[in-house]
Length: 97
Length: 311
Image (cartoon, rainbow over all chains, first blue to last red; front, side):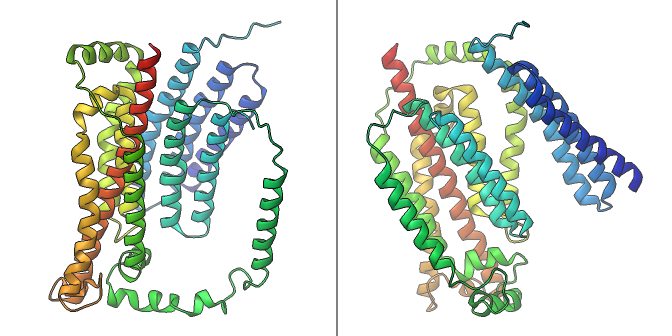
């Protein structure tokens, strides 16, 4: 159980960092947002699953699970709102030179 | 920084970060307040404000040297003042000697509420909290007096067509919000009534409740929201919250105890404290939620008016 939780936490942290690298390294708005949006959702899910496995208390697990479900709803929606706002303001994809 | 949007975002991030360091210092109640008020609602209200005033700062013509000098001088005085303060976390510091031991040792017998912060906030220092609620109430009155605009009745068909156009634009957001709003409202009620046992209380609950309504207003339009949320009822509720708080105090006065001494509210003093804390937290929650809604609606109505004039 401890190993599984550590593994999940490790994957989650790795995804967080890769999302952070993505926001710094990618060239334009949409790909940056994609890097963070995708990586962050999975990373949060992984970290929360790791914490659920780590914690034996039933009620804490339930609360963490509720947070997990909420994040799965909210995070992609936030990315969508960001992207559609950019689209509406005519922010175009950057062409490769 | 010239871009005010970036400034506001930084302010929100700062609020969230300070909430995290409050958690690290085991002050969960303060952290909760900071996260909901500092990072949440004040950022939102500032965003509404800049959507009215414009996003970029006006170029400054005068030299801000005098202001800088004043800030440096006051800052220097404050830092000089901290030199006399006891070292951080020192056990002999007056703050740990004066009333804190009594709160920690006796609050369970006197108040009977597991969350000491709630018992300090709502019972020992209830008069201070009353002052805070009145300040919020005054802020709401100020916004009403300065910004409220007389409204014409909205045309029903116009609302319908606006609603449809927004429906196409915000389809995904609307559906997700519809799923989330009941949970947000439920969470606000949980925070409100669980404040005796865990972090939370009237202030946080009111703000969370108001945030759910802001979300609804932003995605379904002002005119629809105005149909759902009755403005005069909200104003009435804001006053009722303060009145509820004050009348609890008056009841204890009439029973021959100090203002806001809840032990007279029931035969058992501890049960009286429970009831009193529940009532005043309810008053706080109602006032905070209604005032936030009033401020937001008045700001948003101004923006709407501006847009109507431009068209």
